[in-house]
Image (cartoon, rainbow, N blue to C red; front, side):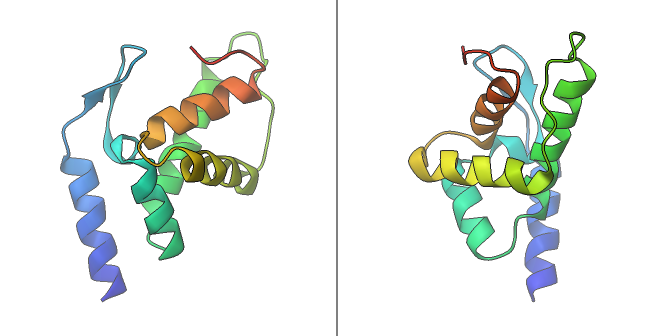
Length: 111
């Protein structure tokens, strides 16, 4: 049963249309989910797509960081950051939480 729920969630995330972020790029997949969804899915261990999305966003940010300013952290630290952010901001999207994470890893203010 748990696998079926995960499979349905994964298909829905992949088929969901993208949304435009405040910074002007399109957000596809799990990053468009709310922080409330993040918190609920983490509590029920249905978070693989969300965790993968955050890791991918941070990885891409590092790839495009030409100055090499992005601090390296393990995925447990990244997930804990998003856990804390989402607990405080349940109406924000996972993408916004991850933007804040990357900004903190680069020591730059969030726009």
